[in-house]
Image 1: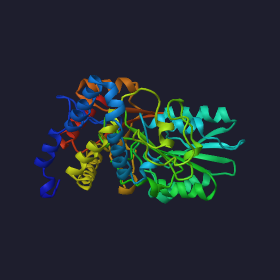
Image 2: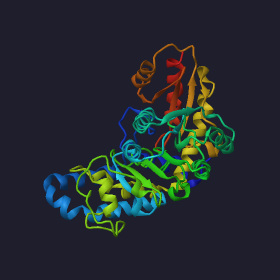
Image 3: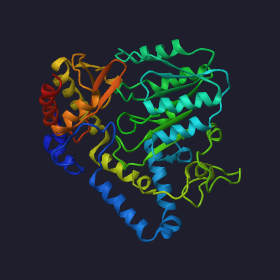
Length: 402
């Protein structure tokens, strides 16, 4: 595999050394949880020591300035104003805030694709039942040849009854990247609200939240950005901020209704604080987002994406057709990112958890995704993975997928 001089194996070996990776384990599951760079771990641990030693000083005096700085850094990275970035524990919390507080006209329907994360499907199921709406799913052309084909699929499903559409920017089961901007534009022309699950998007694909123009965009930092567990966000578009209510009423609930977007003494704004503050919690993961961003910027964001593309291509070459595995993620560059899924042949009779355990017993952390009537093997490749680890997966497949 040809590489530029600064992308040599030595370069990536040194970058890998900066990661906290368990010896003897091949981690091919950044799509669920990203391991931490050592500098990020050291920084969040240092902050937690400060919090443990003197909590009152930490929360009252030390927290506001770095919290605002972290908000500004994350917002800049995401392409959104810091006054519209609400920190959350994860994308599930962010979507629950939207689904539990957003009111839409009934009767009508909430529309989802058939590839949404199961917990979020349940979230909208409850929202629909609460508001007297129906919930409808439709099949996506998961092996589409172009983004236009996906947009057309959404257009065919929109009806006068559609009040809200929810979809993932990057599908969790297969890694298919949806044309989020175009889908949101199509929904907007029809007066349909758009809520985007961007759990996998930050640091995997080029992302500018304002450019997507979703009514509500949510995401995670603990996957491809390699920020600590407990780092998520919610970005309502301009004009939609006051449609949200916090899931917990705490300090910040009562605030003046003027200057709601002005920076306050807590490292937030009055409007953000009402949504963000849920009582005593550990804010340290939020504070080190700038460290995670800086770590990848030092390696080179474009350089990382180029390396990930090389690894994803190597995965496709080595696994497609092996032991009956068939590619379930389009190979076109604008339709895939760092996740590559393969359909497990029907002849394999083992349960999903048995297959996953067999890989784990061979030192490989990799998920097996349940789909209606079949299973997927989902491979995550970040810059710290290697061709040798993919070769190890190949040998394991020969023994497990029999």
